[in-house]
Image 1 (tube, each protein chain N blue to C red):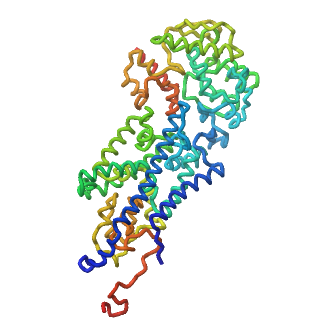
Image 2 (image 1 turned 30 degrees about the vertical axis):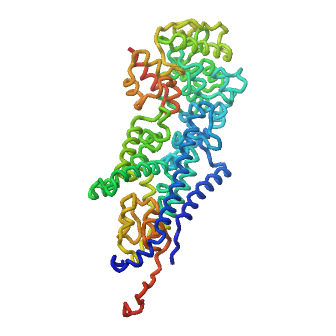
Image 3 (image 1 turned 30 degrees about the horizontal axis):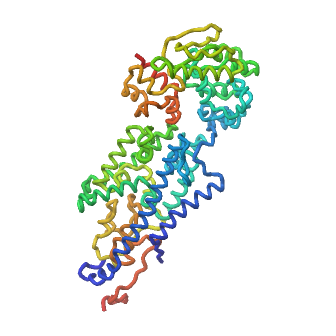
Length: 308
Length: 283
């Protein structure tokens, strides 16, 4: 790691075009997030409208349960033991589950960071929170408590899988803020799900992605793949200037600046921390397979003897 | 060695994987966002591998039942009084519930179909609903086809009901006009479509629940009953509060005009169970 005072020149070079770079990555991700948000909202709306014989052109119509990859996950036990899917879950869920698993093995939970519409809505509301609370935003929960709360979602995951397997019913539907978000107008959403959605949306004003961090069972499952993913976020300690820009932008409060590889179960592969975005030094925080090649720094000899 | 993945590559990967995966699964016939109507299989005992009658849902058509259980559409149509229909293969289990609902205190609906399928195929099924009935036409078919023993016959007799004739059961009380319309529709259907129904003219003015008992006598009941088409609004009109209804439902009550049965189907709940619980709320 380079000390801050000796990196002024490097930092200055790195900052050239930083705004442009940062905006490009942010806009690209936001564009894809909005695409999936609009797509899912349209499919759900179309499903409701179909009861009245109306449909939005060029958009499919399906119950959200039928196209949720987590539906595939909770159906696995029933599929293996009884040979059928849980009620309301259809084959499309299994297909999406397969795609999401392939993606997560390759690049980690990019589904959470780039696709999940609920995560997108949480982020959009978070923008308001960030404006209100500025640097205080996303730091309200003390780290000592927060680190334990992050494991709550594994409890939710175990509970959901267990009760779905034993009851053969889509029990989580009664608590699912994702389903509530895209069906609140139908009058079919249980009060519990509406309350959880409201808490999530209000919570997003204070905490970035609160449901993703503390409650999402699917995020919990995908998060486990951060330990084994092929392309991971790596930090090159030999070029890092320890500015902690990566830490500050991480929506999941991961300390990227102290890790050589981000294996934290909460990483959502948003790329905010990378040298394409927040990191001011090129090729220092990267989504990559393998490890950084050891390059000699300018003025530093790799020969025995050290600095020339 | 290092291989960086840039954000635009990741973006293309995400879009490409989802679009490609969905298109591929569609091409392979794996993509389905609606039920394929494949009943789950029994996994233990003598009937391992057989389709489970318990998994017959309201949306299953006679054709779906034939596909799953090998029980011919023709037999189902005769059993449930649809043998004069243009295309009985498309009749759904929930259509039966809508047509007959409760007769003489017995439910003729999806669970009655499960029971009939079980008795006809010999695949065991234990109904969780005490009031499930069996139409006389269905009973006759089971008897004639030798599907039931004399002992089973005796056990089934209390469940046997005749297809309603002159006056069909009707939800009524607070909204007589609506209720009588429903009754007229039911009578029309029963009279016109069912071969077993006597050809008595419907009586659209009646507001009294009248059914023909299995002995052939006519009984009358002034009770307000929840039927296939009864809405939450009608239950509220009894003087029952929304909170009481929600306690039974275990979740928020939908729009007042929503049909209770439709809502139960959508929510994956047993209509019979909810109906019985709501019925008990009547002051």
